[in-house]
Image 1: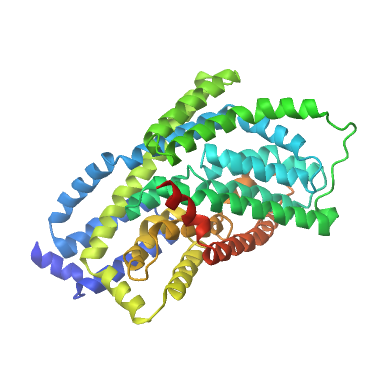
Image 2 (image 1 turned 180 degrees about the vertical axis):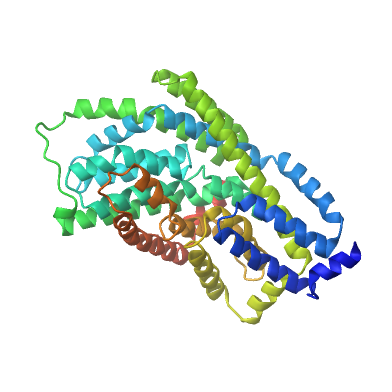
Amino acid sequence: MDGLREVLRLGLTDPQLGLLLLALFVVAISLGFPIAFTLMALGVFFGYLGMGDIIFNLLVQRTYGVMTNDVLISVPLFVFMGYIIERANILDRLFRSLQLASNNIPASLAVATLLTCAIFATATGIVGATVTLMGLLAFPVMLRAGYDTRLAAGVVCAGGTLGILIPPSIMLILYGATANVSPVRLYAGAFFPGLMLAGLYIVYVVAVAIIKPSMAPKLVLAEKPRFAAVLLELVLGFAPLAALITAVLGAILFGLATPSEAAAMGAMGAIILAAAYRNLTFEGLKESVFLTARTSAMVGWLFVGSYIFSAVFGYLGGQQVIEHFVLGLDLNPTTFMLLAQTIIFLLGWPLEWTEIIIIFVPIFLPLLKHFNVDPVFFGVMVALNLQTSFLSPPVAMSAFYLKGVAPPHVKLGDIFMGMVPFMGVVIVAMVMMYIFPGIATWLPSVLY
């Protein structure tokens, strides 16, 4: 068997095998192979070449480690909470109430859409669900009101991606598990940057409506809604969901419950809320359980694959090659952050955020201590950066989610063009956060 291993190695050294492993992974996922099983297959094969039979023991240990990871328990609970809320038609009530409340603001429909996305993001963290639902609910309303197609598409796609930044973000949980950073600190760090990005989106659409009113016409209502009617709509459509979100996030941020305990509370609260709205059906519950199981299984196998891949990549010396290369560039902390975030930004064009978080971000993690970069700040910056992975072609999943539910006359090219200005807004937010790092670090430092 040792002779076979030597033949398969093709005379390559361990570091060369490590770099070949990384290159083959990029090629495989570019061709459409499943991420999790590609990670495991390549990791086991190259691990056998470099480590021998011990790789099979490592596979079992890593699988068991994922199954017993306390942090990951919160993933299925938060996902279940999101699917229950999605199927209870709560988003419809929320959008109507915010639409009435923002009636006097320029681009009121776009503002209501972004506010709904931001609030719904805190309840689900599921980008596909938010974009799809808002594509069905808000996008046709904006088009009928005379909104520019590109602007309306950009609003829905950009607003829908807030779920990977605003807590309880599944992405932050995965980053925390990968970087061995407390998800509670990450949630606290991402809270203000998430609000800042949502606020910048709103500022942008309001500015567009003021500068070019034809792109976001003001609604002409036959009768101005009364204050009492607006207040009642807010109470019915906004207050219950806001109370649930506040309870869940408050319990996490103030240390009253672990993320898993708070997620369990949120899942139960979502069921109670759906029942109160009389939208809790057996069919909806069954679909939510099925989708939760499917999503959680995907996350679990991703972690198994990433642990195997990373362990083998590190054993073969691939990590050291990259570290020596970066350190040899004689960078300072600013240029290191610029390099890291630029690479992540560019990776977001062909790859999805899961691949970037699980495979490529860990390459930078060992370098953070050398450059004196707070891993919480780095994680929030990455989460902010990865907003662009949903907005940048050719992958740009937000565009495809919206295209799937948009009217036939809306072209994919229009959706892509509509997302470009919002990518610029994300870059502005990143610059602001780097200049004023307290946006991400102040709340964790105060609370913990």
